[in-house]
Length: 253
Image 1 (tube, rainbow, N blue to C red):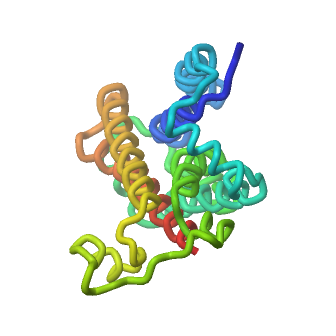
Image 2: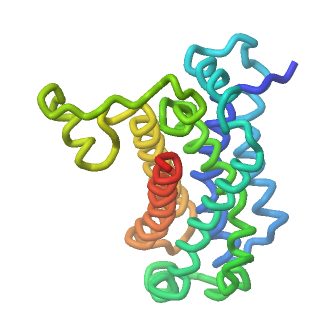
């Protein structure tokens, strides 16, 4: 029997975000057809999603139970909020690619990639279309970054639970980490669980997206220079980093 496993959903989302740059490159610059790229990407996703769906235990882990409990009493199960957050994440990815396509990226691609078929594509010239095409990335970042962040202790959950009042900052009893966190605007209690969860998951997303993209592009695409693979990987890693920062701002509000 298939079951929904939060860990499986997280890994599937991370797999999408880590493999999307490679298939995007093939489709946009090497004119690989959609019917060739999409099944390959789907295979990568199913190789992660199906095993977890088939073998997931009915009893969730402690972390997953906490996530479910928090989600039941917070906005993490509100489809309207998650839809807006997903579009927000998609817009960040799209805007990153859009501005790159009209600034440094064309010259960079010509210089460090051989055998390119094209440098111009309809979606790179249309920001709204780019956002629509980036919706899967937005959904994946919402699942991997935003949902676990909101499920941690934060202002949004405190708004639903007035009893959990925020402590006041005390300069006499605060330690170094709490002082630094307070000066950076994170709160009087120091670096919260929310901040730690978001920071760790953003780091995982950035590293996974960068390393996986670099390895696949540099090894499998003939004529790719080392600098070219680093630049293309860095572009998508930057998009993931900006999305994590933006989600931190949203969760803080």
